[in-house]
Image 1 (cartoon, rainbow, N blue to C red):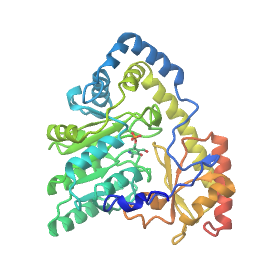
Image 2 (tube, helix red, strand yellow):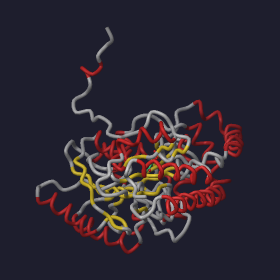
Image 3 (cartoon, protein in one colour):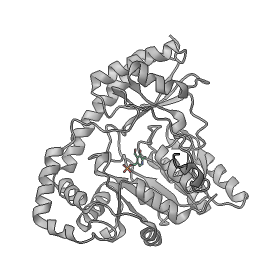
Image 4 (cartoon, helix red, strand yellow):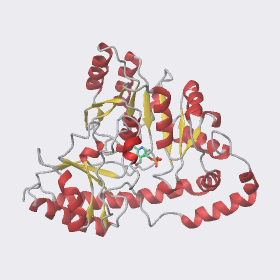
Length: 397
Ligand SMILES: Cc1ncc(COP(=O)(O)O)c(C=O)c1O
């Protein structure tokens, strides 16, 4: 008889509420892949070779507990230059992507049942991490400028009144996943005024800051805060590749110290060596190249939505990032159509419920990622999706 692991699962281990079809569609607008064609294998290989020739024998020893020092130096320089965050390499901890630092920050701050605030639709990976730490997640609505400060004030105020001050507010202030907006500087200041008034810190997830196609890039929340209340995470997943699995955090010293206490696993020194060399030599020009490619893809998807989705849906018009957030007819239920979309028309997308703190809102929203397919396939995939949704009565003809 097969062993029943079900009987020994830890108490309250959350079931995943994410909806992901079993196979990838040819027109894959579901998962957040960047452009696969421009992936710089040749340059990465060249940099790996150089790094190993220079310092390969260092792989014989365990790396610095905070991760490869030259890469931490590079990150400190980069976020100083691009995000106005002035820290030294001692204040940077590398992670296996930015997901690991987010998990470490949750481990440091959250007791089971603690309140954490997010947008009312937000990156599902962080929602899953918050759930794993048994957070009580409170979503705050946004408009086209991002999280609404008055609503945030009300949600924090209500939590405090009930004797449970929120532990932090998680914000993807730039090119939000999935909603696509970027919080302008004035709104960032208003949000900080609210969090500072209540004494609640912010976890700023800035992993899309480099993926800008239009408009100005507002300075980081971390820079605008003068009370040392912002913890900051970033990643190379959206600029080099998710497969490199490299991200980082910086935060006030106490959080960094405690994060080192809860960190489990090491960050690959092998990868970090190659990425440091690659980043210094090529990353800026690579970012320019991929942004030009992603701009074309975004424009192809927006044009195809305009041609095929008619007036019964609304969608975001992002200046950067990888996603378009589509609101379908009120009351539509897209979750049931997700699997069939892949099997019948080869089009993958994510239902809005994947981004909902409760998993119960967003049935009438879809997130479309335009990073992976070529523009012609994006146009074809959106047209197929529109026909499918028309037939299912989700879009008006
Ligand atoms: C907002 C946000 N944060 C973090 C991540 C995770 O990135 P990483 O691959 O660096 O763990 C993602 C990935 O899609 C994301 O969208």
